[in-house]
Length: 158
Image (cartoon, rainbow, N blue to C red; front, side):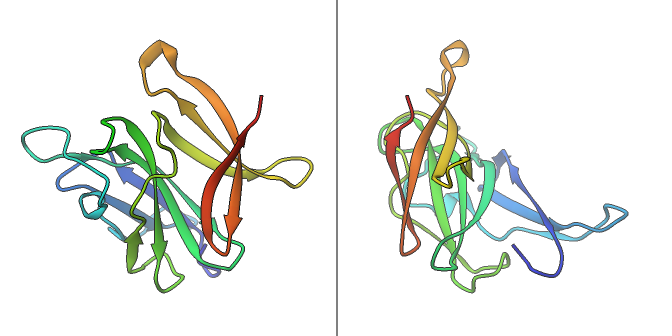
């Protein structure tokens, strides 16, 4: 969302203690990276093993209607012991952050790896897989409600 250079945001899936990274995208695909946020700082996450690894997966940047820069990402939750979509907000409005995690996940059921888009009628949508369970996984699409930069799930597209 940096207006000067495009960014590639990646998740360090089995991170210790749990991080995200971003790279400046150059024509020759070289670039520096740093970790703008840490999954272990999110109040809803939990370590997935005794060594303290956190799953941080599928980061996706979204510029909210109020111009806030949000990052949705997927990880394990301590609340319901399922895979969920978290939301972090850049306090500076830039990818460098600092980033603050929302207290609750976007979904309160198993699912992750989300992408935000507008459909052909201009309705804001979010697609992800649910549940997070091997051959049971299916794509689901919901309306995404953006009220002053606070996003939430609306009705499921049937």
